[in-house]
Each structure stands twice: as structure tokens, then as C-alpha cells.
Amino acid sequence: MFLFISGAEIALIFFIVLLVFGADKIPSIARGMAKGITQIRHATNEIKTEIQKSSDIEDSSASVVKKLNKEIKSAKKDLDELSDSVKRNL
Image (cartoon, rainbow, N blue to C red; front, side, top):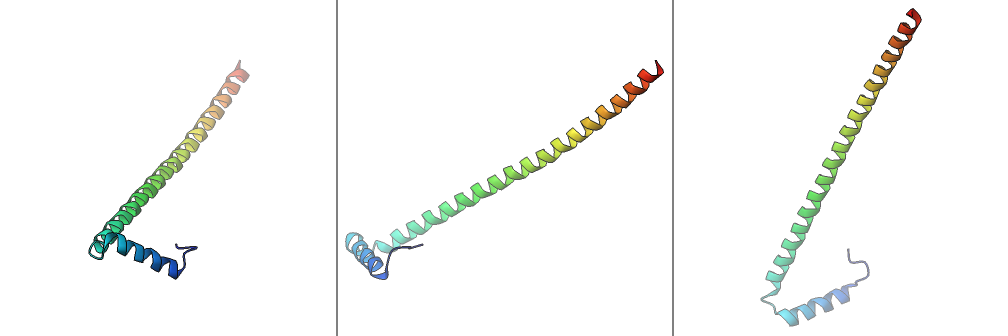
């Protein structure tokens, strides 16, 4: 995750946070950040599941459309054959 941050830079950031907030506030800040990260993860997982559900619905609706088109084509074919036989008899 830390692509361009070295160990010395992380130590410097931690030292500045320690000076600004104090040693007694750092654990509560860390807990708050951890809760925020877990909420973000839960939200992204919910979004992923909703997207997967919608894609499953689209797949099933596409198969229903294909079946309906197939049935319509067979009905048209049957009607054409029937109309051809009626025309021959006349």
C-alpha cells in the first residue's frame, strides 16, 4: 500500500502525530481509523454483491428473452406453414 514511503518517513509521521495528539489519544485515533476502514470494506462488499445480483438478474432476463424469441419464431413458422397449406387448398 505504501508505494513511495520509506521507513524513515513513516517514523517521522508517527513522531509528528505523537507530538500533536499525545500518547494517550493515539490508541483511540487508531481504533477510530480501524472502524472507518472496516465500514468502508463492508460498504464496498455490499456494493459488489449488489452488482453481482444485478448481473445475475440481467443474465436470467437475457435467457428469458432468448426463449421468448425462440417461441415466437416457432409460432411464426407454424403460422406460415398453415397459411401455405390453406393457400394450396384454395
